[in-house]
Image 1 (tube, rainbow, N blue to C red):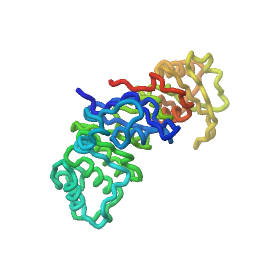
Image 2: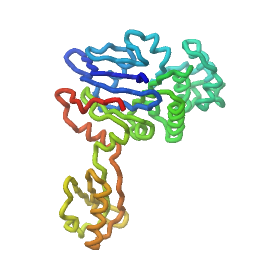
Image 3: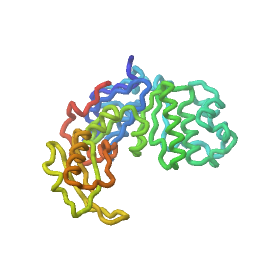
Image 4: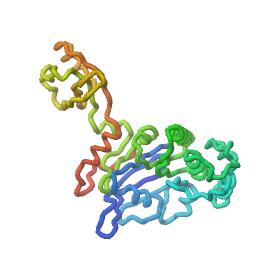
Length: 322
């Protein structure tokens, strides 16, 4: 099947500044794809290129099989975009707002059906200005999914929402994905990307620094075993350290007194955990708050943010279609 979005070796510059430097990515049908980026990474420019608002200096963009800059009408007819602020008329009712949107769209749908899908039937006669933040975002989503587009772009969809409203919108996004809609998501909330995305790409200094399935991206950083011990115990009982394993420590205050928090990071978490348990058993050391966790998306993002800019895009920075 033809990918919904296919970007190959994309370059774009603002004067002498190379904002996008060799980006490649592929988004298949029915995926939620999270495009993340550090400040100034080139994520917004990449989105604009994908949506056809700019033309690349080099490289190619295909969305739904066509060049979005050359065939904008085709793209607009089959995509929806949810911006950070929709700009609806505050004095209109929810139903009138969506009816107005229907008049402006080339796609066809039923107002009441779409309101039901996003859980706004009970607010159909309420003015937009009286909606809560979560309800406004659901109205934004209603306009975005009007007529069943093949691809929707969600730009920071849950910024400023309370936890309950955020969970509601996440559920709606999952339902869209399960119904076959492809979702391109941008967000600064890494928990959101971790919860929703099938594939993730993190941009840094104009290139994709890491990309793949969520598991593949998380595997780019070592898993961690952590525990607390009495500060007086020290770490001599844990020697010698396994090859490829890093051990660091901090004195932390707990409700029952100061403890030494120990973190063991390595490529094989099961082996590392067994090593810690065997060493503690031999030495008679009591391990408190013992836990083993894979790397989080926040840790991966933080590592990317701290990395130096690459002089040129490396092959490992480009995503190959799964």
